[in-house]
Length: 274
Image (cartoon, rainbow, N blue to C red):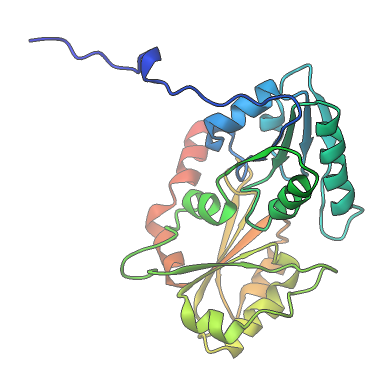
C-alpha cells in the first residue's frame, strides 16, 4: 500500500500578484485575529514601501509589516480627533505618484463601512492603478467567534448589514427601519454602541418584540473579546451596566440563541489560560 503524504507541494501553491511601484492596494485586515488575513493581504504587507493604516488594525497585524516600510497612521474614531477622509485619499494619490508601493490597511473589509469605495474612486479619478483585497468583515468574523452563525436555514435565512453611525456621529436618518426590521430576521449593526438605545427603540417601533435576543460583541476575535447577550428592551441598560466599549458589533435576531451551544472561542481562550 502506498503511503499518503500530507502537505502541499510548492507547485500546488498559486503564484500571487506583486504589489508594484505606483500602485495602491486597499487591503482588508479583518476584525482582529491575524490568522484571518488573506494571503494577498500578507503579501501586500511584506512588499509595501508605505503602509497607511487605520485605528482598528490589530497590533499583531502591524507586526507583519515589512520592517523597512514607512508607517502612516490614518485612524478615524468616533468622538475623537480624526484624520480627514479627503486628506487620506489625497495622500494615497501622492504616495503612488511618487512611485511608492502603497498598502492601505483597513480594519475588516475595505468596502463594508470602511470607505474603501471613496478611496478607490479617488485613485481611479487620479489615474492611479489600484487593487482591492477583500478582508473578513466584522459582520462575519465577529459573529463566528461569538458562536453566532451568520445564517441558519431555520432561524436566519437572511441577514442585513447596517451602519449605526453616520457623518456627524448621529444615527443615519436615511434608514427605513420598518423595511429593515420587517424584511430581515437578522440585523447586524456596525458602529452603533453609542446609539444602542435609539437603535433598539427604532427596531421595536418597527414591530420587533421587546424580548427579541440581542448580542453586543466587543473587541471581536481577540483575547479581549466580550459578548453581552440581552434583549431589545434591556440592551441599553445592560450595556451601560457592563460598561461596554467600542469597537462593538450589535446583532439582533433569533440566531443569537445559538450562542449558548456554539460559544467555542471563549472555551479556547480559557483553555489557553489554564
